[in-house]
Length: 344
Image 1 (cartoon, rainbow, N blue to C red):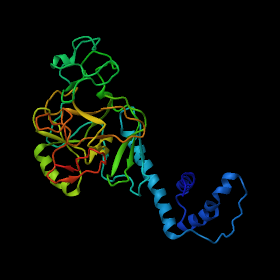
Image 2: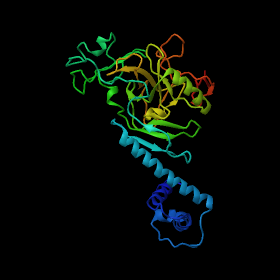
Image 3: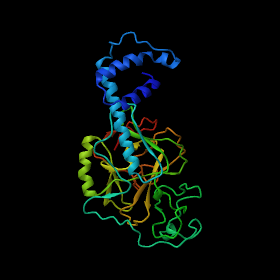
Image 4: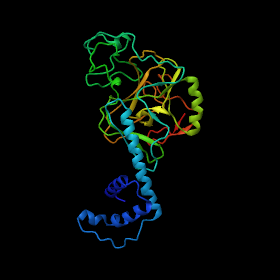
């Protein structure tokens, strides 16, 4: 079935979702096999109106149409919930899997019962030109993270301190990047090699640019250990240590998360993780932001290394910015030449 026909036929079914399978089969036979004549503008006279498609083909067409409707509804829901500029699209050309039934899109951390998140800054700076004046990063003893092109210029492992809600600088301050959210239009797609869903960019992304924040449910490390055993049995990885200085809290993006929930692992990734502090300056509860490590062209899948360290390598003496380690040895399917083949 060529792509031209797919688009027309799926659109027809979507507009006529109440049709019975028998009627769909009959209409398909009357119209589908003669599509070349439709393209050429020739008149069509059906040879045999009693012929129908095979039941398996009819069933597939109906299921595919229902899938497209479900994915469109999920796409609409995501874009209603998001609070950032970039649009999120959804597609699946690999199989008949539709929208996840137990995933809720959120834009910021969701604290688990018993955990309190301070989301309002206690003090701010009075800078009017944060690029040249002593600003929040200097107050924290670090360098301003960005250059004039809004690209990150500090090495991995160095924390980012952005201007907060009490600072007097303007919204277009060069030190307000992560808090503006995803600026790029992205697509959630279904992979064809058994890696589940993934994320690809629909536009070109400059190197060292902020792409997305990793958000989810904030839980204690003790709860993370309990959930890890469950996730290990299912073969999934959504736990991410939050603490910049010690391991007390973890973010779990399995059920609550944003588009970063669907970013796959690669041993040769194009995204790097940084710790970010904005309104919450608690070093145990840093935000996690993903920045591009190189130019990423439209249509490329976005990935990060699930064993990524702050320095960009996997040595034990570098700051750990990776998801929580798993006790089960899991096979990687990233497919790059430098693939390490296994996690742990």
